[in-house]
Image (cartoon, rainbow, N blue to C red):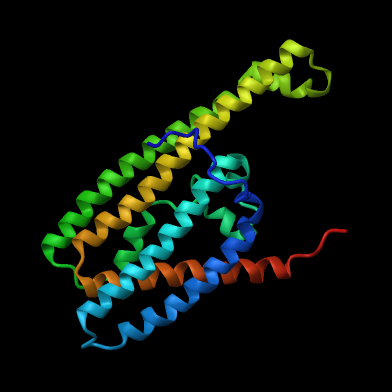
Length: 237
């Protein structure tokens, strides 16, 4: 798990511009989806070109992980609330992203030709990932219990009437919470990345292409569903 106290290398605010970044990132992702769908329809597509496309798609995902990590370093609380997502997308969040084990559902749907050895390796990996997810979920629950602890709740309720010592105590509590949330976020984001990497190590190149196509389609689909649902909700005055 990386050091949560990340120094900011530049003065430009990543978190303030993340909504624009994410929209631009999704637009580029749609272009990659078109390429993935095209390649998946060509049976004799050269493996070298398949690997080139896989490399580009993974680099695009890596860019997202780098930017969301910078954003979390600036304001982890806003990253957890994810205002750049639709309300539907936010219902699917697990520690500010997709649950790592969702990749196994995508494999089940997109890769129907696993060999017995591959299937066994995937199942073994799934067990390991599920265990790590439980550990992270417990760490997150522990943080939430800290926030709900009587001393913190009492200070929060008296926020407008705190004396100097209590203000310092409140600030220290918030800073400790921030550090804890950054640690859990880093662990979850790392698990998302390593899970996909380890799955791809099990799959053949053509199977990896199908998995990436399914993952990209899934993300684009829930984005569109979310936009549609939000547009249909009555506006509050």
